[in-house]
Amino acid sequence: MEAPLHFTSTLEISTNKLWGAHLPVPAPVANTFLAEGAKRVVCKLNDTIEFQCALIPKGEGVYCIMVNKKIREQLGLKEGSIAHVSLHKDESEYGLPMPEELAEVLAQDEAGNRLFHTLPPGKLRTLLYIVGHVKNTEARISRAFTIVEHLKKNGGKIDYKALNVELKKSYEL
Image 1: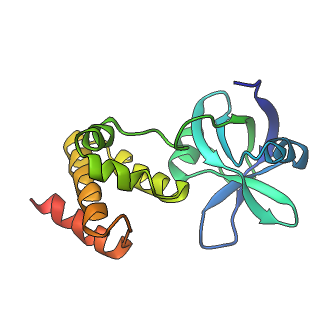
Image 2 (image 1 turned 30 degrees about the horizontal axis):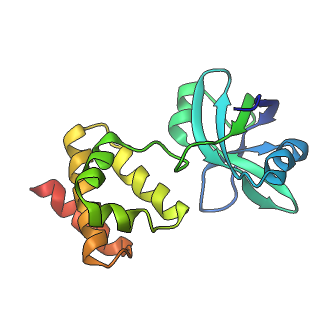
């Protein structure tokens, strides 16, 4: 792993409907990663919380990092707050942690594993997030099974509306 790049940035509230708040990334820092073909980074804020994220184009050559509500609350960040940022290239396989429950389901289901690994990186991260963001182990196992069965039923395609219905049904069981 290369040495991280450090900078300070001011939290801004986003003017679009896709995300709530972001930290602008200085052009020289963003360009360092982009020149290497790296849009996925690991961000550490205020030497406290580390998370995987992407350099998101804001327009006119400006890039930013999304900061979700949970992280903002944990760090007490509000609009205009200064944050100390450390970034290094995300060298992980998926750009998000692989939940062990999903890894186990994939290890036991060869067809599901093959279909899962044919998905583009963004869709993989979406599925990893769906499984991994819940704390309850049983819910993660249920989500993992539901996702793999959905992929097999749909020939490796994701119908997010149908998947959402299937995930809700799996909670009711």
